[in-house]
Amino acid sequence: MKRKHTSADVSQLVDDILQEAVSRRASDIHFEPTSRKLQVKFRLDGQLKIVDELPKTISDNIIARLKVLGGLLTYRNDIPQEGRIKGAGATPIESSVTDKRLAVFPTIHGQRAVIRVFYEDAGLMSLDQLGFSDFILSNLKEIASRNQGVLLLTGPAGSGKSTTLAAILRDILTRFAGRSIVALEDPVERDIEGVTQVQITGTGDMTFPVALRSLLRQDPQVLMIGEIRDAETARIAIEAGLTGHLLMSTMHSGSPAGALLRLLEMQIEPYQVTSSISAVLNQRLVRRLCEDCKKEIAKTGTFQAVGCQSCMNTGFSGRVLISEMVMMDGQLRKAILAKSDIEELDAILKSRGHMNMAHDSRRLVTSGITTQEEVNTESRH
Image (cartoon, rainbow, N blue to C red; front, side, top):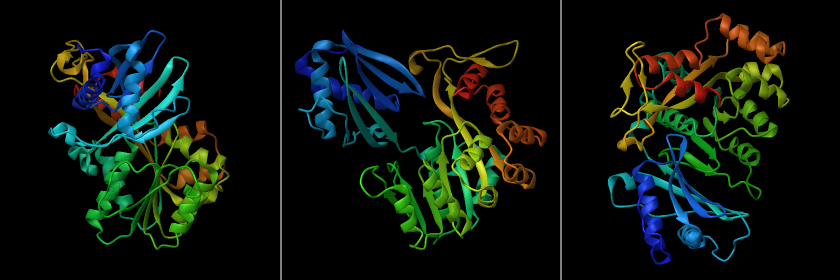
């Protein structure tokens, strides 16, 4: 990446970096100071890649320019700050950007800045477009038609959980017009027409438990909580699922069994878990092989990553979903009521032929969409 690296061109330099990041569909842009330079990195398909190294002499000017764009205090270099960079470009790719969130943090080598970029993807608006297996897709639609119960989504940050939740809400709006739907999010990531969306700031009196308790008196039929983070939120969410509300949320857990046990660790009674939870969906995103350069391995019939100019020599372009889903049934209920450990729950799932993510990923590997190495790497997260 060849650029002019003089202080006089800082504004144009920052604009060029942001524009290129958007054109590459980078989800995050990192400006990381070291003792000698300012590294610029793009997160492409979940992986960080160094795309430029700027002179230390213009590092402060670069961060100051980002602060101006994000509406932050340029004279405060000793505290973390967060803001939003407004404005979209004129090209179709740039106009797909719905938000750019800036976070600046002081380090021993200067200020570090990260911009998270949010895109509106027309190809990821409905459940049918997300790439779920037929089994999971049909079960998600059946759960979305219910009047009560709790659906939990698990997976690491950046695994597409918010996209899935938004698609489920759109499905409900399409098939069951007139339902009262409210979403509590921190922050609101995408505007969904027909859904009452509430942003929880994380500061002040408007917390998830406070907002959720109040909303239950506002006659909602469907509730979406961005994340169950603590025992109090979990307790109210479970109660909502037991009292005539369809509730959906996310939870940090490595597996469906782990999510169920975490609720028990939050002091939720086993009978409440078995009575309220409808299903747990666990998902990951793996990188999709670049169609311009992937190479078939004759011996196995699978493909390997090569790397070319169009994929910035990564061998991958875009990402694809792998997932697993556990529906609450009689056998699982008995195990939870008996407070079985995670090994016992996993053994039950295995004995009944549970299709885990390893099974789901095989269809993508055999069809040349991704590689087994990529699946193995992501499954360790």
